[in-house]
Length: 190
Image (tube, rainbow, N blue to C red; front, side, top):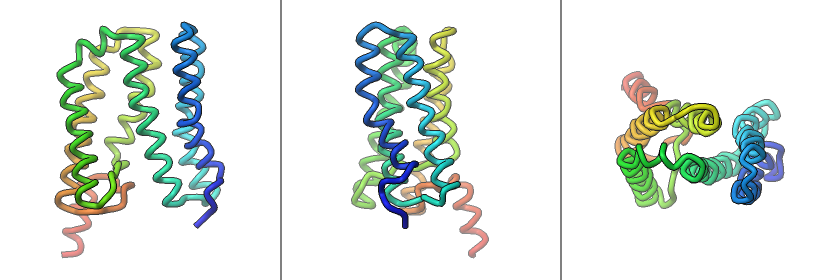
């Protein structure tokens, strides 16, 4: 186990610490400066994992910090999208209600089952985190109403998978790739 003050953890923490700066820039009306800051801060999600593996600084604390930073960053991304492009969010309101309901249920279920909320990093959820990041960036260039809908639908599938993992497999490694990997492991062991 490595110490808590590592490069990957600093990168994850920077996503949380620098979020208020993004809000300030956004409210100041400097939308392209906001975009540059968003791209820079969002890129830390990519680099923290790379540095953790390359520097052999993977830790339980780091994974938890990364999950927390992801949660703040991607919920903030939804707010930013709504603030900058409200018509895109308005067109997807029903899908967002389903999305937030499943997200809340997943946190409540894992909190009850495991005495703490768990955020899985399945293939679907990792892929979609990248999609949220690029969707906001693309929104500065073209109408992303349908892209946002696709991202939300993929998230819905991802949270259903996460809930099924909690119910059928219990407290597994949050970095589990998918329910299919767990099923494959179960059939191999039987």
